[in-house]
Length: 168
Image 1 (cartoon, rainbow, N blue to C red):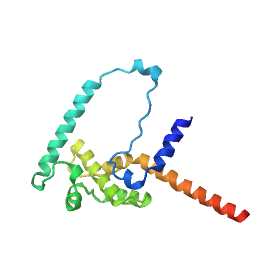
Image 2: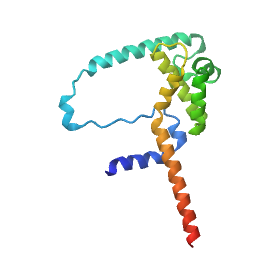
Image 3: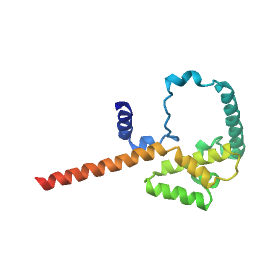
Image 4: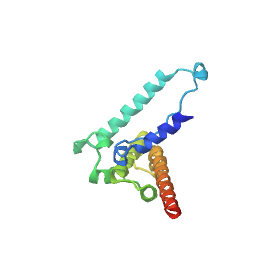
């Protein structure tokens, strides 16, 4: 099939600095049209439940940052980001390992911390834990997969060029 390869090729062309500006990178599977009638539609109920959870978390964040002129985790920066989103040792080790392995920019690193802080809030946990960092990293999996593909593609091109140079 050409469509998945075209999408992958297109995503590989998007620059790292642009991808860094997205908090979540997730893949959404297509729905099998033939089984569409079998899907039970209770999305209204789910949406209401999700909206209530989000509202609860926003209130928690507003209260937490009351004296700082910010309302939500997406505005955390500098010392506030360190104070409120930096995980304990195991979580920090996992994040630093990912940062080194995937050459994360500081922007991507900080976004992962903010997402992990929000995940902890959604789970009603005061401190960011290793599991929250792992989940936040999983939401950037698509970016990591594309980065891995880019690296291997470049290596492949370089080795092909080197091989060609030896022949001529």
